[in-house]
Image (cartoon, rainbow, N blue to C red):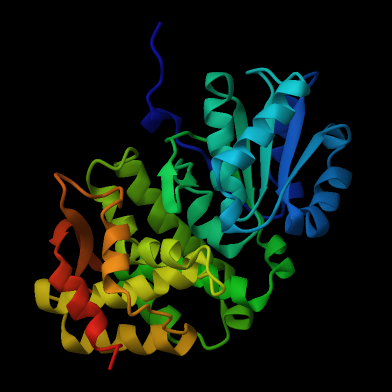
Length: 353
């Protein structure tokens, strides 16, 4: 008996109001099966009622609520979800629905992927960040020992449903959080999208559905070419080598950085490195700097050694060397580029004057 590879199981993505998609058909495949809905405190209050009242198949669904926040994307919380699933008698033929932002889809996908060696799950992202990044591409993960996404799997959802109506529940800072990943997708792959995004002043009012869809399509096409991140898919980590280190650095402080905010700073710093170590022009860098600084506060620690220590644990590292992605131009990116401590010092120097 042959088992389908991960690349053959990539999750289909459907756009539009949830009631107009195949979601109800998906649920019909789990008739007489147990269904659980994973939410955090925010989606419990703002999104869950719509889901349960809109679909009769979910009337008796088990609701599992997580505490909100990246600091809860840890094994201890996974244990609680696994315990709930076990006590409720869930088996491999049952279903978990991840209704939430990036934390919920990351943790929920991981929980499902290893529970009894694979519980079916569906992603319904409710934040811009989850729609354009976390819920798309088949990566699951949790944080470990303060390090970002150190434990995870590649696991395909049954489907991912992107209903931008859920975005109306978001505060303004969450729009900026997701916008950073859209900026990244443009920087690595599409100069016209970058130009379009550079014109937006009020993200919540001006970001169009078609632009979100375009950003998601960039990621989906890259993932389809390299599902298990052996090569090309690594460019999706542009901004994340430094960004993840920043997010981890501030995670348990009084001033935590949201993922998108940390990535935005990472985009700026890794773009700065791209000027000297790749072929990004100074003019291109200045356009990136202007865009990032207009939207995000540059929260950067003076503790360069602490940041460098966190970068030693980045998943892209190879042979004990820190690896990053660099831009050759806006819209073009290379991966597996070696970084040394002096590079980080140089990138941070202009913002520590």
